[in-house]
Image 1 (tube, rainbow, N blue to C red):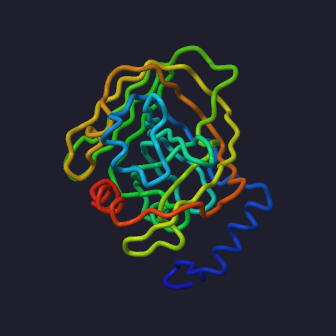
Image 2 (cartoon, rainbow, N blue to C red):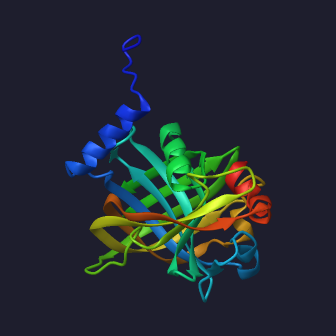
Length: 253
């Protein structure tokens, strides 16, 4: 204890997380999301994918902004991301090419342990009976805004995160050589509603999402989900210097 603040060692932190999982504590409890699937620019997307990973046919990405009111490792926080639907020799799945959060602990753990390219941003998430409005602002630019009008409840919604996920970097990363990790999150969808979602993407030098995906009005959904953990986490490939240079702005700036 230092000035009223509890200091824990890495071993103690790991022990607590493992114990929480063993006790059935959810890693993220009651996450609230607005999601939308949008078409991608195939040529631009191909530049930011490593060898062996190709865009889905047709090229598609899931954009989301979420509010995590409770989790097992830090304070409540918010997050936004672009998940590219990909084809690989190990099957179809998703790859996170861009992600922002508003909490530094979530940033550090996500980048170091799971290869999510997290950066800090100002994120808002407001929900009402009629829908939700969520937005990301970073370095003076309104990078992403999603406004959703709630529709009918979905009885058999598709997965949110429970897909094969191919992320790059994380454990084993070097300056210009980064591992590709394959993991499969587990989740329980508590609620899911169809939604008309208006997506606006700003023009940002540091977050050039508009190079790969255009905004517009699309069908999406509003979802509440518990995220439990992952079935596995395996190294399955490498990304080299070309990938590092092509993704530099989106991942590091």
